[in-house]
Image 1 (spheres, rainbow, N blue to C red):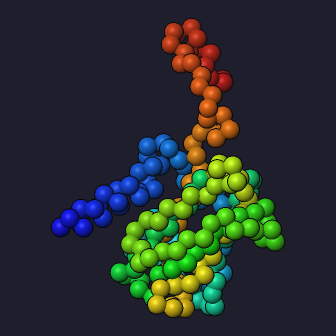
Image 2 (cartoon, rainbow, N blue to C red; image 1 turned 90 degrees about the horizontal axis):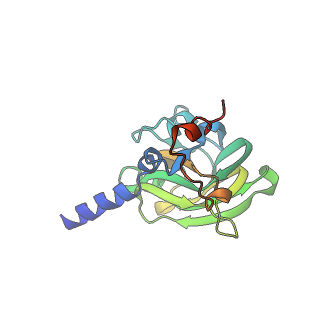
Image 3 (tube, helix red, strand yellow; image 1 turned 90 degrees about the vertical axis):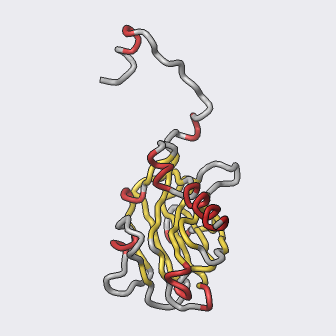
Length: 190
């Protein structure tokens, strides 16, 4: 019973939608063009982005399996959330993932490599540059390098891409609140 309670606490902490509702981050996935290295018919980008944990993307081909997320303009990316479930997908569950970023497909560089040990739920992958700030990029590529039990194809149930709400360059600057009616009338652009 205690393990169940601990897992529930971890699931609450690792809930990307809760962070979005609290206004800490915003999901920028809809602003991107998504493509996959391969997929089985009926198990593609639409299932990966439908916000339903029962559906999934299933790759169909040799590894590495790739998810390409391409933005029209340079975008600040703070973290990527992946939903994987070892209990349901077993050998289809990713084990080793590489996150890459760049300005185009020919200059992608590795930001993070993550080892997953039988994941069951949301996995948060923070993306930071050398100065420990969220990355700014045109392309994020998620490469599934290996699966559990040496599986060939992979299942990912959902991916969410988060950008910070505040512009991180100006996060340290605090502006005073306009409290009187006269000043508040000029606080917005008309």
